[in-house]
Image 1: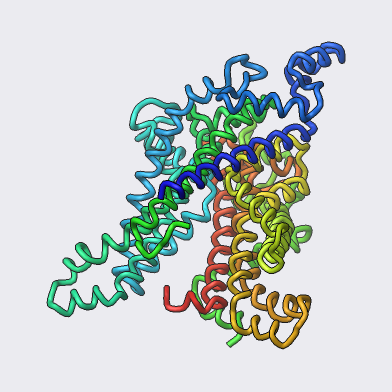
Image 2: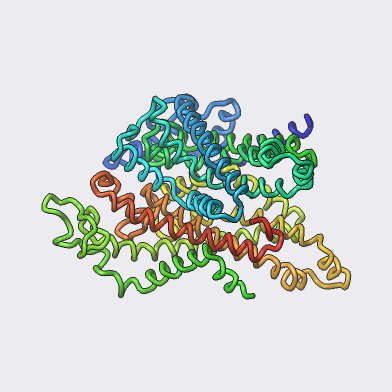
Length: 306
Length: 282
């Protein structure tokens, strides 16, 4: 177990170094010029060249990446080109808002996804099952910006139940969390249904029924715990979905998290921030996958860690 | 029974097929069926105060903030969605299959490098990567398609890789080696035909993902650029009006959801039909 974790952590570190390298190369190759962006449209070529030299952008690629790499392994993600603040500090300041949003989305998607999945499995083949599965398909087919804008229109503008944007109270959290979670709710609903159907087919469920236990008791005590665990184990993988979703959701709702930070940085070609947010996201995704793999053998002892 | 026959027998898949047919038809016939030229700013297309017009007998789905007919722009935008859906996803399935088969069938150090590269790509938040690339290159229809393909091939590569590996260990492949069949023959005659069904399923499901990704990039303003209409950039252009003119978000939004939903429904049904191991799970 310990050896397995050690090997996976080493792999994770290698993947993160790879991510930093690939991102750096991509940002190095793009035609957008950060120095021009900082200097403004009317700046002379000389000013732009000065800024480029100041930022070290005139150095050869390997020198630039080498310097970034040496700083990165010491936890220094550099400074924002435009705000001059440390990227690590900017991300740290924005992270709590994003984590709050993700927690809300996770709560919503599990609540909706698991209940509808269980209900659909128990009512298999009925109109309820069909309606829920169509609903789950719509959930995975709806772009988050459309869901977000429609929710805002109905529940904030028309009904006035929730604020139109911003951050702070629970009321602010509801609509963004639903928007971020609706995709996952669709997936969880389908996975939960299929897992529940698998379990209901097992011999031990038939045995439990055969010895005279009533259906409700069999479902709640025997089927549910076995069916729900493999689905819960997918939470780690969710982090990737969330990391993609936050850029859009935070921009629709004006949520002050790292997604919005990234989006603003992209528009201003503020490369250190783009690098920083990409790396933080990659860390979260890699750790999420590791978590999912580590939980798996506890849930299903037939799975061996290799 | 043929695959198409099986599809038509399923209500949801049939619904998906009908929607896809209608959208494809509208896109192909758009020069003849748009009620107005999609880019024309109509003299009577705005209120006296200069606000967009709600749906009416004259403009069925209303007009946008520049006084252009929304229905005409949606029909024209269907072309954008479909072109990107087919081109970007076709490229993604092609790259994914190439990588997956190479790594799974030939293995060796090339296979190892390819699969490590795939692992690396999995660690990127897909949408963030796409936004960064689309924003920093000068956006055009083809750049958007290319960016989406670069992000979406990874899933296909993993699925094809796993399937190729498990096929390699099946008896009939072993037997082929035994009777002295060459690599090329095994690959072309025995492997690829087994992979086609997966490619068809992912080719269909992937279009849904692609349509959503294109819409999202265009909504953020880094996808297809106006005046070329795309369902995403119609919402992007008009979103400041969404409280007073909600139809400008509602209709394109519904169009995106319906098209993505249809490809998902058809893809899911295809997986059911083509993959015998999934039988009885639904």
